[in-house]
Image 1 (cartoon, rainbow, N blue to C red):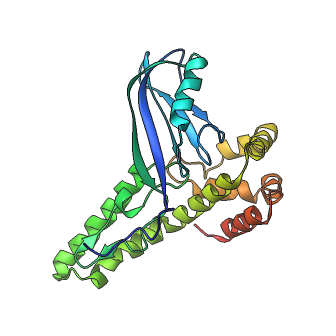
Image 2: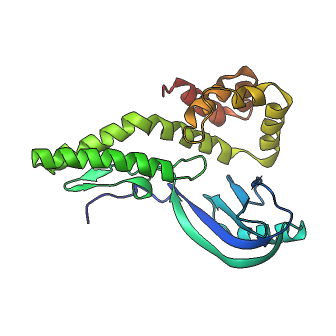
Image 3: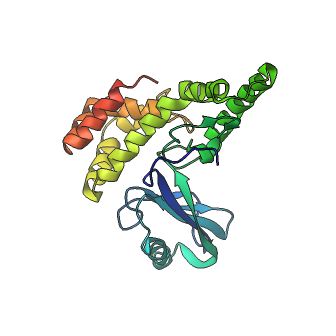
Length: 246
C-alpha cells in the first residue's frame, strides 16, 4: 500500500454501457432527465449501420435506470436488441487528495484525473502520463525518488489543468442540483437567444478543455441571471466559477 486514498465515496460516478442492434441511427444522441440518468446523461452512439453503443453515467444508484433506458429506446424504434452487456464500471470525478508518494506517481483515472463534466479520461491520462514521465526522468537524474522529489508531478498537473478540473466539477455540482424543468429552461435560453452561436463560435470552445466555455457562458448576463434564480446554492457556485482564473 502506498497510502493514497480516494478521500471519500462520493467522488465517483457509475457508468453502464451495452452494445445494441440499432435502427434509424445516423448520429450520436444524448438523453437527459432524471428518469434516464439522474444528474447526468445517457447516450446512443452508432458504431456502424446496424450496431451502436448505448449507456449512461450517474453519481446516483442506477436502480434499474439502464434497463428502463434500453426499453424506452426499443419502444421508440431506436434499438432492436441487446447484443452484449450492459457492463458497469466506476469513473472518478475528483482527483485523489495526493497523487504522489515515495517512489510512486499516480496518473489518469487512477488519480481521478477525469473530465468531471462528461467522465472522459483519455486526454488527461495522456497529459498526466507525459508529466509523470518527465518527473520520473528527473528523479532518475537526481537519483532521488522521495515524495518531495516526486511532488513536482502534482505541482505541474495542477498548474496545467487543476483549475480546469475545478470548474468542471463545479459545473457538475450545478447540473446535479437541477430538476428537469430547470434544465429545460437552461436549454431553451441557450437555443432561443444568441448564446448558442456565441458559444459555438467562441475561441474557448474545445472538445478537451471545457472550463473556458463554461465560464464564458456563466458570465453572460442572460444565463448567469437564470442560474442564480435557481437558488442561493447554485448562485454561490456560479460566483466561485467566475472567480477562477484558468
